[in-house]
Image (cartoon, rainbow, N blue to C red):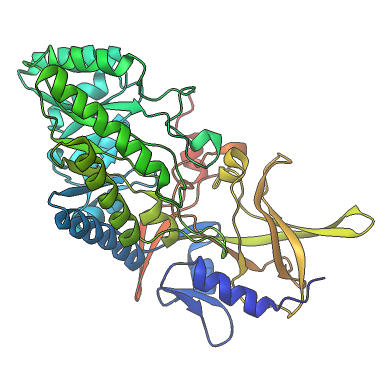
Length: 456
């Protein structure tokens, strides 16, 4: 039993990890954007993904304004591409366009959503380590502003498709800068032993030669790097930028071509726990602008136009997943530890990140204050897997019972995107909460949906 006040702990979590529009009702339930979560559960059911729309807009605006101001201050421009893989649907794409952001997609499906939302092709970037000929054709037909090329085969595929259409495709080369982000190995993406990009050791130079040898079909904009995800410090970006700028200087020296752009990727971290302290958009923009300015000055080269690709940092903190408790089971782990297992009506099918990345989350009792004393709890899902863990370790009131509501914050990114129908459990809806309104961005799947793809 802990002597931490459940009320104080919940207040801290609401303040540090929940969307900006979150708070408590007079009788101690959680509300988001003016909506009592008890009412949401009654009308829309659980589990449900909830998004504070105003919070998404605020964060998108912060990134756009912060990077515009910081890079204009050093004499160049910056573009913010939202990383669609974090979470994407038609309504989200329209919102981002309204807030002045560009869009990064990494499949034909994500590109189709962007097209349905009316995002202009020139404001879209296509990523992916194995783009199919059909996806490349779709991108060129849509007039995408850039294709981030990831292999020698893709150079040939993009060039062939561009020639068929009598267009010149604007491309960037994704590079492995060798910078290791301090994060989980599966979301660190700039080291050598992984699938993305060209190695600095010979591959990048050959890729540059091949692109520049096809001026009728390809225009090389510059280099792209993505060092990983959930990054709280700028040190890795500093070294990545230095190496990319050195590459661009080599291209100018060896080929007489000044590459106009540089893409530093994304990976900016968010708070999943009250103890996490990510940099703000303005802090990160200021640090990255200084990094680019200093690296270019040291190399003696003009400032390029810079791109960044935040996804999680825009939508992640705006999301909350609402569950209902089904069972509560005390389990004696050792002579001096009894852990309470609280099972909810979702789990690894709606949030596989704890299983994939050992990701840590927290949660709060959402429908009432609960007792003042707490117990160490593990929140688990309903799936037929012992690893089906939603929150590994959290202090919850010791009177949590079946029928209670739990709210897990910081689930706006990579939860719905990675969701599955494991155990034939339909995926939850995505509900955008506004003052006085609930907008269904994605409806709840039904049993009919589960059966729709089956043959006779």
